[in-house]
Length: 498
Image (cartoon, rainbow, N blue to C red; front, side):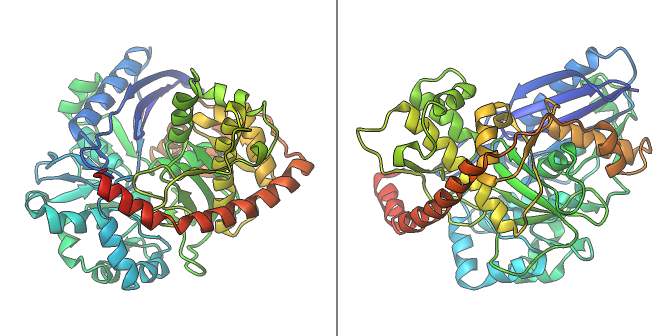
């Protein structure tokens, strides 16, 4: 038995081959470019993403010495990938971290629509969600909507290229238009956002029992796989990654240290009480949902810091940070670097990053420490917003390779941290879903128990945790004080034309 799983991230497309034992046998990676044609915009070429998938799959398939039992797909979520009646793109994909619909979100917020939407399905509206993008296109590019027959997300786009079928997984559909109690599209939500006209664009919704379709002849020729090979539509990347680290039971928590810092907990039902925050998505496990807090900025901040400090590798940032004492000599950092602002655990399109308290006394070590502490305090902020106190935190993503960062996360959250032993955790989650969808495993928890492997625990230091608890309160106070300046900074950007 051999399996190929694709994880199409925002900046990297990965294909992972698994052997008969379920071990990673080969990995191929292709970079995915993100275009920013205007301030706050984030787009991708849909044909370029498809081409990267084909190349990656073909490469790992050529390195396998046996037939492929199935291909399973997971990908970045949200955004809007519009296609016409033939399945061809009607323009570039508009991504999850795009901020062009900010004014529309502001209007919906002032009208109370955003809060009412959260009370209906547990999802806080943000500018990169499909309804916001569709509403923006309706005002600014109606001809594109007229040319389009369906909106997909990245996973649905790849599935359609492989199988010829236009469909959407429940995780992708959870925000913004799905009623999570019935697992069907909600006419009430469409009406709430004034988007009854968008109903014709909704793709077929596929529940857990209808994830599989056959590889088309055209896709077979491109990928080098036999026609008819089963193709599985797995949940989108944050859900597949949660499965890939074994977060399948209520109360478990995990954090993705990737393009987004996505901290999420497994819940039995959507929670629409309390202050609107985060999103709620179907997890791929029956009767389980994820309360997720995907930020707009994550490891990109680390990469920016490496360029700023002249470091060759993100791992060097952690080593540099360890030369400073906790607290970075009173230097605080707000890591809200996305041009789209921030969406979790709060939404503010005007949010911007800042160093606070800087003086001549601070050097590169304190700057590095403050950056990682700021990002880690965001992880804690999301855990607090989830309302849960998990017994442990499972982590994945590129940032999980940093031992200093993992120690900091354990100290800040106060719980043991476990890192997956898999190189590509989202692909592992897609593998588990594929096993169940093709009948090779009874259910996801059983498959996870057999195939998910974690490293040793990174335990928190009680004294450090106590100090960081005080710092977390300081972090919130500094953010609140700094937020007063965000509208003025937006005006300054407008005047400067950036």
